[in-house]
Length: 115
Length: 112
Image (cartoon, rainbow over all chains, first blue to last red; front, side, top):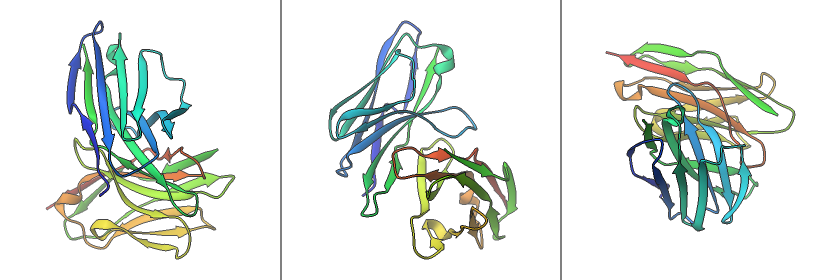
């Protein structure tokens, strides 16, 4: 089973709203990721959590706030977003194999529209 | 640092014809290599990966890729495509850490 689930599938929000994206995996993976993907572009890494601690923050604006409540869950809290933040937000999780390599598995994404 | 170049931005192909998607990379360290597929309005799905060993890697849905260290390439092939293979394909490399460097993507359109 290599399933990562994300909710909601679609989200429309105003620039003054506060919303959250949710990601869940039950594969025992110890690393979880948030990516942003604009149309016709590759995903861009935003955050990495390893063992429930923030490991990488790719200089993401503070209006995006990640949270990892436990090893299976990853949230992305959104506040005061801009229209240019409209994108597909992808969650991924990974496990480390015997040769010290991480293989990432992606969820279906949340398509966000900021009005 | 690593970089990935996907040499074709768009590849139109007829159903049941073969397809090859080209990927070249550069890196100052050893890397692991991946191909992901993204179907319309979906997330990314892992097609295959090269970690070590045999340079010919077989993946899901009839795809395979060949790692060529001297040419720093990792081209993806399928001998006979289906309409359902219409999608965006991303080549990616990763050193021994959490970061994936993606290519710009190749749009494959399969026509009947």
